[in-house]
Length: 298
Image (tube, rainbow, N blue to C red; front, side, top):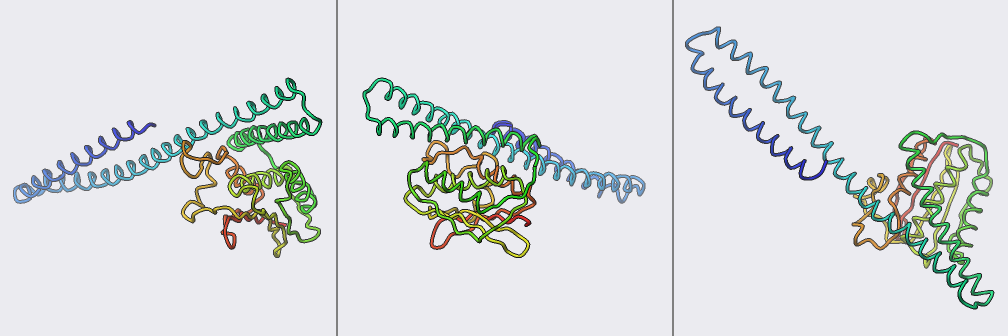
């Protein structure tokens, strides 16, 4: 439902309510005139007034519920539009970059080091494209309940170290560090846990940049495994922390936003954590930045 339809709906709703109140006013006047003349007619009018009041309450509740639905649809439509703008740009960017790298290697006489550097950049762009496609597919599977959890026992520390090594290698910098409790055995879906960490680290790199340290931590608290990602970026306002896990939601407008993304990463993280019957928290990192903490049953 678009904004024009919503405005028409509100106008019609207000008109119906005003007319109903106007009729009720005249009915009350009529009742007062008839009270002295006929007691039976007075009782019937009172019955009609009672039924009218119930109808008015139901009408208010219906309008309120429809208004909520309209508002949700408008918000979803806006986020979907932002998603399409973002994805269209981001799908074209790595493809254009890879085309340029390959053409440069093919048409110019380059040293071995220069060729390797361009190939590394092409692989990095291809990885970005692959991650975006994976997120789109995972979001679609989650929406259609087509993604099932397959639990197995694995070492969380080993998985975190492998992920950190991969990201540091791609970025050619050791910007991600680990703070781990030794030998944390996890019983869960290894692919989903890896997807969770990949999205959180990508999010931290996107908003904090490669100039600041990113910390991946894991520990055990009673019967819960606690792990997460901390960054030293600008952080997230408290009033937006509950919305960042909504599908397609991204802070700011797509036309003025400089950070890359599709608005699916944190939505996927949230849904995968729920499938593990866990809890996802967006906390402040001291002295600044964000801390996405996950607690799942051991």
